[in-house]
Image 1 (cartoon, helix red, strand yellow):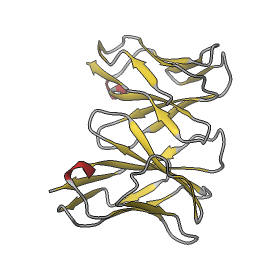
Image 2: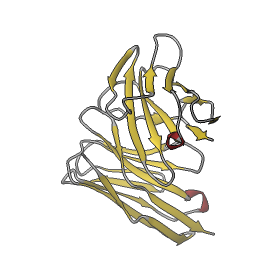
Image 3: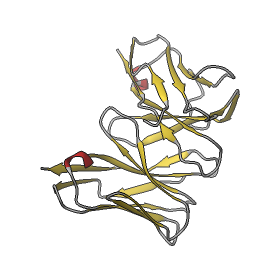
Image 4: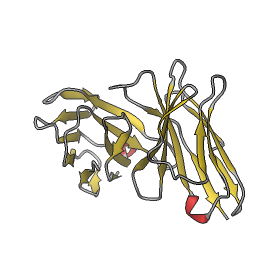
Length: 110
Length: 114
């Protein structure tokens, strides 16, 4: 089945640093979604991407839909402590169920 | 979390008991999805329902698990004769339409089996 691999698995950074994480797939996706999950809560949608090459921003977050449709990346600029959490990429398969990536754990030291 | 309501937030059951998890989708959403998350893993799809219909249950175990989304009321995920391996966080998501519509998630039900 379709799988999404995220890297890095975890990141430990200083407040103010920029962060970059990516997501790759062995097959094509027509939509890429980026979610953030805080401990004890559900995933919150950050950015949705619908077209190959699309670059979309949401505040300090920027995400891009790869040209090959097999990858996407998420950048966070000027990180702050509340950026801590697990970031998941996800994409819907042909029946619209979401396939989730393996997650990137972000820790930000003040 | 964008209006998807799940209850209870935490549920403790003994082996062999039944667990019933409820999900009320966002207002105006008629598509509901259930996912399961084990510790330190991503979410795994279980079942997709539209009002009164199961659209895709390919991720749901064939035995002991069932789901419904009646015309009135919340969607229910039911686990009969629970076992220790059922311990997980169960998340519900909803979308307004099928197709390229982002799914919005509730805060989940954390099921613990004693």
